[in-house]
Length: 161
Image 1: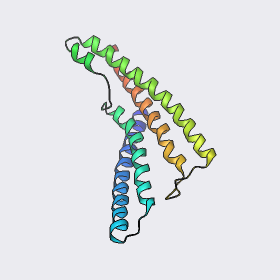
Image 2: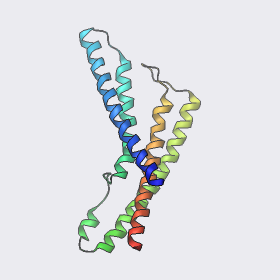
Image 3: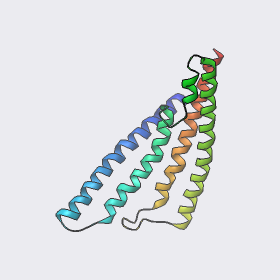
C-alpha cells in the first residue's frame, strides 16, 4: 500500500511538472504575442510563468530526491569505492542529512504558507493568490523528506538481508 502511494505521488509530481511546463510555455508565448504583435503588454502572463517556474522547482525537489538526482557530496563515495560497507554508511548519513534538512524546510514552508493565507497575499498583475504557490515549498520538501526516509529504510533493509 505504501509503495503504491509513493508511486502515485511520483506520478503526480511528474504530471504536475509536465503540465506546468506546458502552461509556462503557453504563458510566455502569449506574453510575446501580446507585447510584440498586439502591442498590449500584459504582466499577468509573465507572472503566471514565473510563479509556475518557482512552484515547479520546489515540487521537483521531491522528485529529484526520489530519483537520487539531487545535489549531494559524493566525493567520499568516490574515494572509498572499494569499500561497500563504508559507502553504505556514507549513503545512509547522506539520507539522514537530506531528511533533516527537508523536515526543517517543510516546517518553514508551512509557516510561509500560513502567513500568506493570513495576509491574503495576491500577485500584482494576475491577482493570483500567492499562498498556493508558496505551499509548494512545504509540499516539495515534505515529499523530499518522505522519499529520503524511504531510501534510508530501503538501505537499512538491504543491509539486514
